[in-house]
Amino acid sequence: EPVTHYGTAMGGTTVEDGVRTDWAPLGAAEGDQQAAQRLSMSATIFHWGLHPWAIYSVVALALALFSFNKGLPLTIRSIFYPLLGERVWGWPGHIIDILAVFATLFGLATSLGLGATQASAGLEHLFGLPDADATRIILIMGITAVALCSILLGVDKGVRRLSEVNLILAGILLLFVILVGPTLAIATGFFQNLGSYLVNLPALSNPFGREDANFSQGWTAFYWSWWIAWSPFVGMFIARVSRGRTVREFLIAVLLIPSTVSVLWMTALGGTALDQYLNHGVEAIANAGLDLQMFVMLEQLPLAEITSFVAITLVIVFFVTSSDSGSLVLDTITAGGKVDAPKPQRIFWAVIEGAIAIALLLGGGLEALQAMAVSMGLPFALVLLVGCFAIVKGLMSEPRAQ
View 1 (spheres, one colour):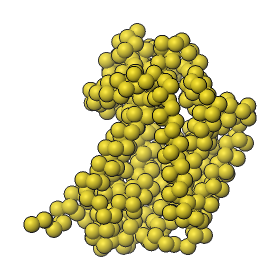
View 2 (cartoon, helix red, strand yellow):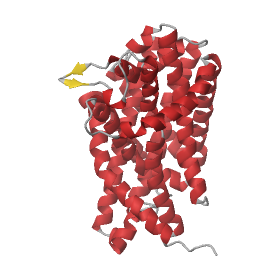
View 3 (cartoon, rainbow, N blue to C red):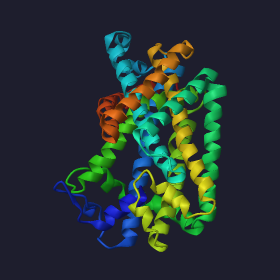
View 4 (cartoon, rainbow, N blue to C red):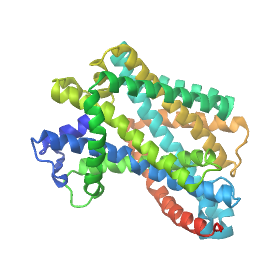
C-alpha cells in the first residue's frame, strides 16, 4: 500500500473517469519524493492504525462492561440497554442482533475473499499455480475446512494454538525483514512515520472539498466500512478474553499496543519496499498489483522462496483464525449470549461464511466484496455511536472507589 500511495502522491495529475486522483489537498508537491514518501506511509498508517482499533474498542468495552459488570447477556443488544431499557429483549433487540450477524457474516466473507485473492496471487508467483477463480475457491474451501477443525477443538486447543502459531510466524517474518532489509531506515522511519501520521491526520480525515475521490472513497470509505463490519466479531471476541481487566489495561492492550505494532509492521514491510523502489531501482514493485507487491519485495531479500512461502502461510492462517473465531461469535449472538451453544451451530456459521465468500467472488469479484462490506458497515456505524453513549452511561453508574 505505501508503494501504491507513493505513486499517486508523485503523479499528481492522474485522471480516471473524469476524476482527478491527486493529493494536492494534503500538501504533496509533484516531484517531491520525501513529501510523497511521508504521505504514502501516513495514508497507510491512517487506514491500519488507531482507527480500526478504536472501532473494535468501542464495541468490546461496551460489551464487557454490560456483560461482566452489569450481568447482561454477551450479545450486541445489551449495548442498547441504557437507551432502550427492557425493550432490548423485544423486537428492537432482535433487529440489532440480526444486523450484527449480517455485518459479521459479510465482513468475514470480504476478508476470506480478499485473503484468497492474495494467497492465489502468491501461489502463482511462487509455484506457477493458476491465479484463477478455481484456485481461490479451493483456497476458501481449505480455509473453511481448517477453521471447522479449529472450531471443533474449541477455543483453547484450536483457536488459541492457531493464533499463537500465527503470531510466531509473523514475528519471525517481521524480524527477518528488519534485520536483512534497510535496518537503520526502518528504525528511524518508525518515529518519522508516526510523527508524519499525526501531522497529516486532520487532512487525511477530511473527505470534503478534496479532489482525490479515489482515495477518500475507494480506500478510506471501504476500510472504515470493513472495520465497522468486523467490529461485532472482533469486539465480542476481545470482550470475552478481557474479563478481570481494568479499563486502563483494556485500552492499552486493545488500542495502543496493536496500533504501535501496526505502525512497525507497515514501516518494516512498506518502508523496505519503498527503499527498494526509490534507492535500488526495483521497478517491478510499482508495476505489480497490490496482491503481489509483498512477494516482489521479499524476492529482493535473501531466502526469498522460504519467506514468500511463510507469507502465503500467514495470509491463509490469519483468515483461518478469523473464520473460526468469527463463527464462535456468530454462534454466541444467535444463541442469545450463550458461549457454549451446540457445535453443529458453529459448523453451520463457518460453512455459511465460506459459501458467501465464494458466491461474492463468482458473482462480482473484488468489487462485490467491497460493496457488501460497505453496505453492511454503514448501518452498523449507528451501533457504534450508541456504544459510545452506553459506555459513558455505564461507567457513570459504576460504584466509585472510596
